[in-house]
Image 1: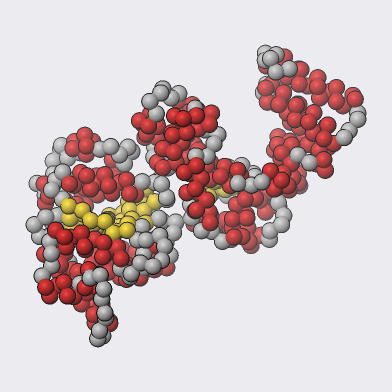
Image 2: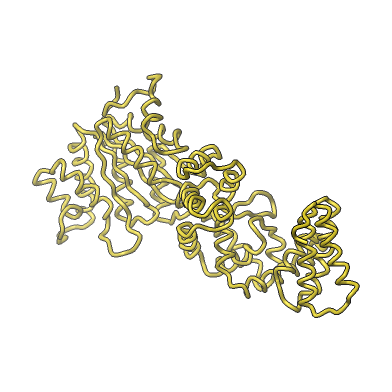
Length: 463
């Protein structure tokens, strides 16, 4: 047995307690990595870095590991980097050390040196550089003493928001050769919000070879398990696949969507953005430069998949601004590049949130610009042209909307998509009326198209 009663990696039953105790779906490998790191923390501090997008389950994973380690005699302390300013420097360490001190009080001399972190009030005196070094060394010594008998899990949470002192103490502790004790230090952060301070800290931490866990979306099977665990009613495979596609496996998005599914049914779950998800996405978007937000609004009109040439041709924004915006969105994980010249919103929910936040008037104008861009670049893409011109819903574009909807309807009929053809014929009629045209023969052709498509589809109820 390793420290804290953990089974060694050579024990063939090692994963049994994990699988039996777990309430965390789809993170078995990540859990095993952290438990293995804990086994190494026997007289020497072990460090693990856990990164991922908001909602990927960094906190859930660390809480799950805490429960498993608690069953083996470990204790835990959390230090959370505050979301807003106003906290003292090194505040996450203050949180963790106060938890440890309540269990294992430091001696009088150690408490004096640790006063900047432990005391409610502290007046600095003397050489501050020397005092900082003494403080860091005192933390090293105190952790060694406090964890000699009982192993501790220390979680330094959300260090993408960490102040300079928090990161400096982290690096000192992780790289100090004299740092002993039975400590697993787990550091969590959003990998798309790494600033200069954290980037420098991560570079220093790389020298000690920490375990690295990058959380991504859950596998489809895990998403299905998560949804079915949250919703008591039976769920069909098509709905599960739609949720997988919309959420990209992000556990928070999946659970929020499952709540909509339970309350409002499958149609709402795969067509609406849950309120909690929308709030998270909006907050994520507000972290981007204003110009980048505007470009993403233009992009969302194109759908989840974005042709860069069309985005650039939409007008109103110069190429460098568009490219800068795209790079910002790629770095923050809002977009991915599936192929050259192509972009894709990471989650359909991101795209839908952007689109739903647009006023109807702005949507219509943006669809018109998009249609003009496609007409210049891909004039034979009648389906896309029909979609955007119909969505532009203005008298100025009504004639083109009628024209392309007619062509797209004929194309749909050729490909036996009769229900889609009927919808396009109907859209053409609406646009024809909006245009103010009075050509009776043209109108009769559109009406005949609706009847023909419905007859071919076998659906006479919508005639």
